[in-house]
Structures are given as C-alpha cells and as structure tokens.
Length: 371
Image (cartoon, rainbow, N blue to C red; front, top):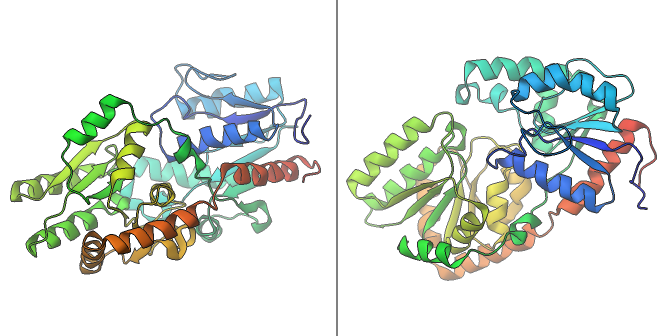
C-alpha cells in the first residue's frame, strides 16, 4: 500500500469529465490519473453520466448547490476537491474538508470578455468558495497574486502547483484517415498555428492583424485557427471572413479531437498565443513540448510558465508580432533553435510532480502527515 492510500476516498470534482475537453477538463482527467498512479483512492463526482456520483440531468450549478452537500454528508469522503475556480457548496460540511483549484480570475480582470451573468456568479461564488475551502491550489504565481489582490483570502491557504505536460506524448498517433485529411489541407510549409477558444481575451485579433500586415508587405503566410467558438467569437469570425475575401490564407478548423489536434500542432512552423491574460496557458507549452517554436504575449502567466524558451510580444504590438513571425518563417535555423529550447523547458512540467504536490495540499487540508 502506498503512503497516500486511505480508507476514505478523495472525492474529485468531475463535473466537466463528460463534456468537450477544455483546459479545466484536461486538468481534471490528468490530475485524476496522476493521483491514482500515486496510490490515492479517487472517486469522480458530478460528471453528467460517468463516475461514482453522476449528476444526471441536473445542471452543474444545481448539482453543486443542491445535491452535493447532502451527498458529502452521507458518503463522507476524505475530502472534496473542486477543480473549476469556485464550484464548492456555500457552507462547510462537517468532517469533509474542501480543497479548491483556482485557474484564473478572467471575469474580474477582463469583465468585458464574459457575460454579465457569469461575471456576477463568479465574483460572489469565488469569494464564498475561498472562505469555505481549507486549502486553495493556484495553477501559477500570477493566479495566486490575482486572487490575493481581488479576494479576501488568507495567503497561507494558497499553494502554487503548475500543470503537467506529458499528456501530449500519450495521445495515440493519428490514423491514416487523419493523415490524409491533414495532407489534403495543403497547408503551406511552414504555417502559423493558433490553438485555443475563439475567445475575446485570447487576443486572436492580434494574430489576424499581424498576418494581414505580412500580406500587405508581400509576405504570404498560412494561418490555421484550431479551437471552438466562445464568448466574443462573432467579431473574430467577421475579421477572418474579411481577410479571406482579401486573399489572406486563414483556415479556421474549429474544435479538433486530440489525435488530430496534436498531429496538426506537430506540423506547424510557428505557434502563436498572444493572450491578454492566462492563469496558466497550456496550448503554448504543449507546442513547446512538441518542439514547435512558440511566440506568446508578455501578459498574465505566460512569461512565468514559458520563460525565455518562447519569444514574447506585447498584447497590442502588431508590428512586433509580424516581425517575429516573419523572422521565424524565413529562418529554419531559428525555428530549430527556438523549438529545441522550448521542448527542453517544457519537459520540466509533469503530472506526477503536480499530483505529488496536490497530495501534500490534501495532507494539510485533512491534518494528516504528508511527504
């Protein structure tokens, strides 16, 4: 029996387990697997249909506020770990400590990028969740500092634990049909890739404007956009349409399954991610893990997690991004050097390390001795 195996299971928030994979959904799956590999007994609660306590047809909010407190009181797990910024019951459940993971404070820092209803829900529920949680995991130092600046929370509750990245290399290689489909796209070599939701805060507009700047200067480049529609996507899609009408080669591919997505990423000449704010920022680190030269913004957590292994650009610096893109597209040697540096840096992030650190947080939450 490993040191962290306990008679009472850890109840892990799995409310996004059965949904299309987002950053938090990926965090849920990878952390669950890594905790189990460390010997922890983990149960998945709140998924729509899978796991040990599915919520069924209830909404995530309705289940968390209505059904979860009763379930916790009846089953009494070792602890409950909420993984999506604020989704804890509003009151403590005696004998069941709460742990919370906070990924970012986008609704408070960039309120124009989310709906008014979600902004108010986030503000009040996050404040309450930070009160009832015994321990809080922040996915970066930037997330920790943001939380301290905007929420009344005791600093000793907070622990920074970065994500892992080894999931990228565990995805099955693409099948023949996928390879043929990617080949049939006829993408220029090298091409530029942006991956992430078409979200107002992701600053996709800067990428589009930089590629247009290259086009106006006589440098034709192919830009691929991989990601689902999100709040604020309408204006981005209008800009894409306007560029295509001018003859700029922009390919919006939408949401892609993992095997397709990572196969596409491996083919990219340059990955660009100039987000205005990230609590962590998985896509650029995933690209770096695959050896793809990467450009990020100098905002949010991106300098923290990407370090000097990715080129940085200001969030409004169209000329700077265009120049960096042109430099990499025109220089195989620069692409190779930056790609190698990125991969070496990204190899330092692992889900096993994240799980070990998370288990130490659990030990503090429960008052149990930890490694």
